[in-house]
Image 1 (cartoon, rainbow, N blue to C red):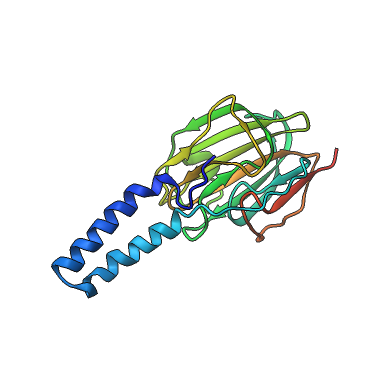
Image 2 (spheres, rainbow, N blue to C red):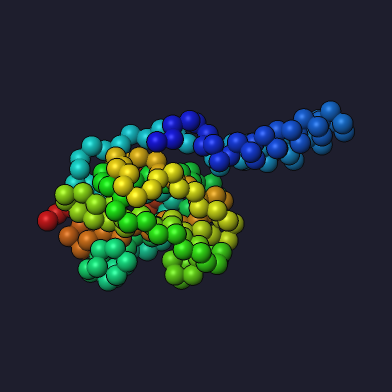
Length: 212
């Protein structure tokens, strides 16, 4: 959905920092432009939007985000699946790509934005307390729930999709600014093939496989 090398949400930060860098260099000198120049490079890095090689097998569940697997737990999901399920939580540091991708092909049949706090994204309770945005995806094989969760630095969750949209596997659908975590809830019939501590890439790393 969003294919530019830098997502548009970063343009305003890039423009402001570029202007500040130029003004500082011209008014004071090149050495004074190091700090705003460094911040400009960081913003360009943070809002990067790399191309990924998306697996084509429709029975695979892909990682919705870049980052590190924080936890894999069994739960009862009463938000969308309404059944016993497995929740995989992925922590994104400020150095990870923050564009989120669809784990499967499917139609968005559920969407919910919830206001909340901005606790550190690595805390166990952030899925309940922090600002978050969830989408439920459904296809003939399975239903899954994906939730973007804001962190202590993340103050805005961005979504480029809405109810009724049909996503492809690995398709970009939103992002979280400046530190966050992402949760994916899948049926227990899915075999999880990652473990706690694994590094994953959104749209590229396979985190599970449908077995039933």
